[in-house]
Image 1: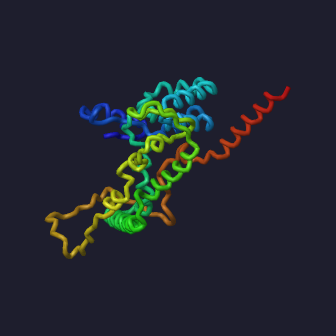
Image 2: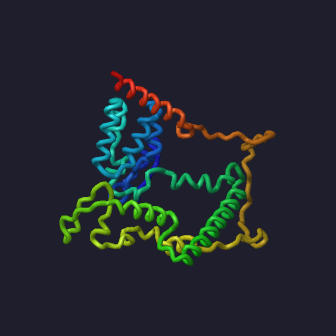
Image 3: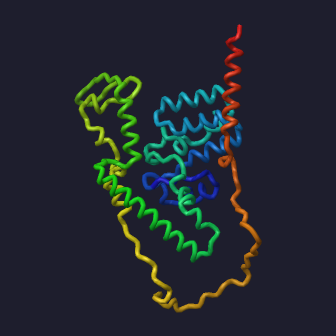
Length: 287
């Protein structure tokens, strides 16, 4: 199991104290988005923040080292900040394959978007709307999966789009074969190894992108909840805590969520930083 989270002290402590949560049974990885956010809160440079993301999301070790050298060239303190974090925890190049391509906690946090209307509701209403949203979610995707089957698609729309894009790029690839037995080759610029060795590229696509796998995921059915008249007698009396009292006010309730650096738009800051870099390069070229 691979647990991806932010670097909250309580989470890190819980993982460390879990005797069974150690490799090869389980590993703890950091959400790259949170790492970049904490990095930018300290360094306060969106250009370096972008380089931090590039370094963490890069799978090739040589490219990771090149990006880290660029960060060190621009700001030694920024490099030292990232260098003191265990590289296995936040970089794809040192991960060892545990993340399966997932760099952030978006996989779990996306549920907040799916169930956005279920916030700040009574428990019974929250359970009901969660069930309704889930049923609708599965129903729509089950229909979508059937359409993909009728169109004789091999993979889901996302995988097909990526495959076609890489297939178009492969036309410009140059491959020099070294060993047919070992299937080793040197690729110039891009990838065309499958075509050089007459290997079906489809065999390299993971099974979970298959349309049949997609349909199996959303083929499950849900049982409707019957009226309360048909429910079993709970054999106990529900007693509400009289000390808990919610004060109601007119208008919409204010959210209690604290916004942080990840909620701020930084497009303008990036443009200003790029403009400053452009001006400095022009001045350097002036005799």
